[in-house]
Length: 221
Image (cartoon, rainbow, N blue to C red; front, top):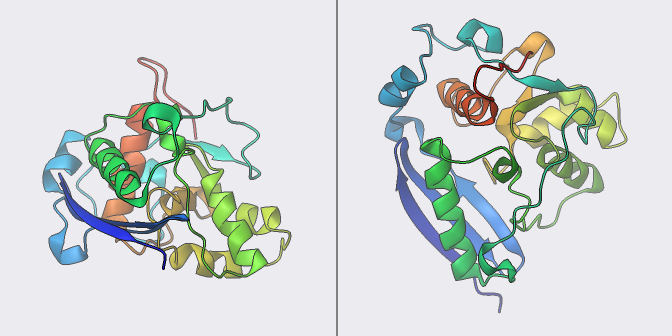
């Protein structure tokens, strides 16, 4: 029987649950709306006092991120592979512990650009269709500091007319952050939606903009 391990880490935005098996991470649950604590982080990031909505754009919140015109993102600089501690394959328990640390550091704004790829974290995709798996892999190919559209994900999955289907896969993503569905936006940088609430999506993207921006050198959208 495959052993799975689950743990909860208390972050600055609330409790996050992480679960992994021998095949990799299969669940990462961000705080539920009633558990979210965003006020202090929202203020620290200098975000404007406006309510996020699907039609709002990243520019409305002063978030400057580059756009992937195609997935995998050809515009991105090469991303270094970030190895697991010690470079060895981790047991489910050690993997969960390492991911909990990464999650905690993410919401503290304490990761650099390469670390935001989460490339060292194995993800257990489970029983998924080829299209769903391709969309999940497409999301993983969006680097920190970049966003991509639903149509770009659909095209990368071999079904350019299936942007709505890609959106369904994005919305059902069980592995938040590590499979970065928050980096998927609509035309013109519209927020569109997010299962973890739109204010959380804004905060996550604002954190990534901060962690990937060189001092004095804003990244254009």
